[in-house]
Structures are given as structure tokens and as C-alpha cells.
Length: 331
Image (tube, rainbow, N blue to C red; front, top):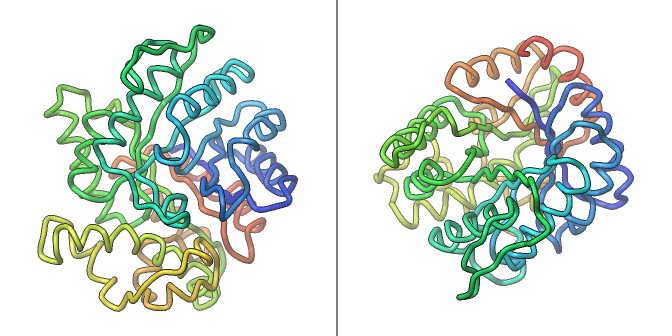
């Protein structure tokens, strides 16, 4: 199992860079950042600094979207970084949640996302595509490589991952949900004539290493609220008795709304509806041994990477615990 760290680009940028360097030294091979350009600093501006300050770490957004930048701009940005630092970028992408909703726009359609993934990947790797109704190619790209990993929850989105994406991002560490989503992605890949094993499976979730479970749960409750935004969309589309497992949908009954001003923050008041049982399922809490046990189970299901969200009041100690105890036990 590989490991990534997921950070928010809060000011000052020097703090983000220092944590990425610390993560790489501790065995984390991927450095991911949130991409919501109003809530946090513009993430693509920070990637050159991260790449300059690390030696092998692969860097990218978790996740960007096709609706806040022209697809050719996204492709050229990745291609420029790859040309400068040797193909060390990755594009995590989805329909858009906070980045779109916070500026008053809805998430893009899956059809738009599919077209965007094609255009971004082809352009970033030097091939010609049709964009805005005309042929387009970035002429200076020579040997670019850009894996595109798509974040998804619902049946149609999971099918698109299997049909098109290089990797799948599941934003919850619940083994039951991992079994269902991984299975759906693999089935879609087989139906599309692709090798299911070629799709990288990434589980992304917050983790807090320690023994005070009550405090850990309070610090990580925000994640259930964040996931709840996507789940609410699924319930609106499919209902509570549809194809989406109850393990994912049942907890949002008490959800009354969501204020993006507190998005991704410990103490988020919009996450008060999230019960402790969801935090225990969706996140990793408790001592290091509990994290190792859960991650070993996820690896047995097929998770190739665990991406650690670090948004709580003991980030450095949790990062160090992963570096010293948890990563060595699973690598």
C-alpha cells in the first residue's frame, strides 16, 4: 500500500511546504491538496514550490473540477509542471463541490466531466483533441504523463471511473463502502473492455492517532458533513431505497443544510448531525494498532493507496505516527 497526505492550502504557504517535506521524509509518496480557490489559496500556484522542496513526491489536487478553469489551462499547467519536474503530477478530479457551490454554481454534469478528463489527459500528454469545436494540441509537450483519478460515490459516476479514469478516489475509509464501490468500478471496467487491475484504488479519509476517542471524534466530525453533501445529492437522485447502500446514505436523515464557510474544518457546526458511529466507520481513530488493522483490511479489499487527510489539532503527531509505526507495518 502506498500513502499520500492531503492538506488544505491555508496561508502561510510555507507551512504547507514544510508539511509536504516532512511527509515525504516519513514515507508518503503523494502530496495532495484541496482545490477550492476562494476558501483556500490557489493550489496550482503552490505546486512548483512543493515540487522544488521535495525530490520524488507526486503532487496534485484532491480534487479539481472542470468548471472553474478552462480545460486547456488545466492541461497546460500540469504539462508545464511535468516538463519542469519530471512527470511528478497527478490529476484528481470530480464534479466540483465547494469550489463550485461556494461561488454560486452547481457541480458539473458527468458528461462534462467525461469530456474534460479526455481533453485534459490528451493535451497534457501531447496528443491532439477537439476543444471548443476545433482541433487543439500543445506543441511543446514531448513525453508528458498525467494519470487522472476520479472521485465518485454514485452508480453512474462509478461506472464512468471504470470506463475512463486511471484511478478511483473513494473519500471514506469504510470497508463495506469500499467493497461496493471498488466492485462497481471493476465491473464497469470489464464491461468497457478494460483491465480492472489497471485502475488504481485510492481511499482518502482523515486519521487521528491517539487514545482519547471522544476528542478525536469531535475533531473529525467535519468529514461526515463533507461526505454528506455528496450523499444528499445521491439521495435526491436515487432515494433512500435505491442502489446506493444504506451504509452510505442512512446517516444524513438529520442533515438540515451546510455552510461552506466551515468546510473541511474541525468544529464545523454543519456537521453536528453526524453520529459517532459514522466517524468510526468513515475515519481512522484510536491508537496506531487500530489504524494498521483498518488499513490492512482496506488493502485486502484492493486499496492501493491511503490518502491521509490532516485537518485537526494534532496533525504533526499523527503524521509522525504514520511515518514511524503505521507505514512501516503496511509497506
